[in-house]
Image (tube, rainbow, N blue to C red; front, side, top):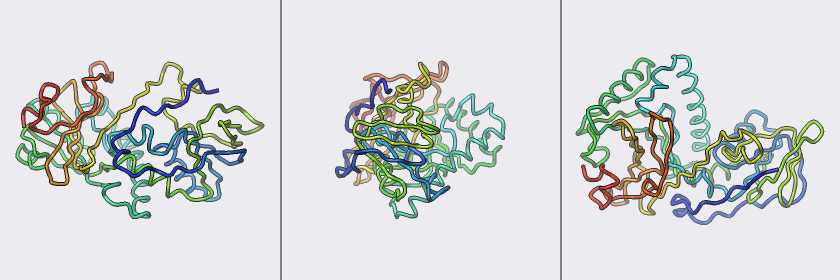
Length: 339
């Protein structure tokens, strides 16, 4: 029995830029499938896609508590990475080559799955843009971090390019950054549009049920019985793809941390670059976008990370906001004042 159900935290800016979605019907009555997937976000819909590739005859039911794209999946920062973006991560620098390559293989397999869907369905760059990523520094210490990261990538045979001050200024439109490092494998997505598009390209025998929260599941013979408000699913297997809400069903008690990074995107802008502040801790994550007229805006994510304590913090002062590079938020965004 679920101790709580997902609640919509608000309207993401990504969703607000899109037309209203016509959701798939909710589950009404009993169904029998091979696999039930709880959660219709990145993990759940990608799992449905992959299962259908491995076994095109498998009956799959995806159960999404709300409307696809209007939960956390449609409110994240909008990037799919192939390499670690912690440019000075102690964990990364200490990894063995085999562990590093395994991690990158998994991440690139996910990107390959997404790239395949984008090509099959003709998604444009406004949904799926394989434009790469820029990590940037704002100080001499930050420059050293990027140089060390570059050394690690060279050791692993990874393609990348270090940028000097003038080069990264040309990319970002800001004089704040002292150096940069470009890696080509990251994909930028409009997360709400992307996740909707993944949902809409699923074909029979995969069924998607929106507005269908799972209330409970229990053993039923050799399989499982999943109960929803207006129906039930009998399945041989269950895929839990609801992240922190796994705790609602008794898993990982006290071990899950719920996070809702609401990335607000202005209607007139399109994704440009991912920019990470590499000048030590605390570390802010930023994303540059450009208006239709080409003028840049700086978007700040909802949290920052202190590597010394490995904790993520969020407060009203760190909630997402947009600032003109010459704007009025210089107190909370020193980057802006240094433009």
